[in-house]
Length: 134
Image 1 (cartoon, one colour):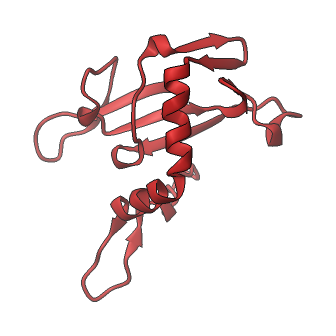
Image 2 (tube, one colour):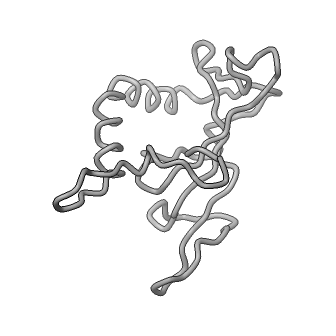
């Protein structure tokens, strides 16, 4: 579930800034999202099993070339710590899961800086200086 959307304003050297919403996924610089774990059928849970004792949610900071699709808000229904999705959205989820290996290869490629005469650098492997991981 998207928590925050950032976009870069026009102009070289401009900052990434929070935007309240967007109609065009292409204008998004990055997203801060809350992650849900698939529970059963069309239900996902906020608290992942590995963090159940602490009741922690997981968040992720996704650069623009790391998110694949957007689904209409009305296809997702919140129910406490769980999310239920429509059958059409579940079809999208299942298609993405089936192609997960290939999608991950593409995301890694998009997030790799090719440097002439030097080792390639994966942007996904860089840790931020404040200790927050991507």
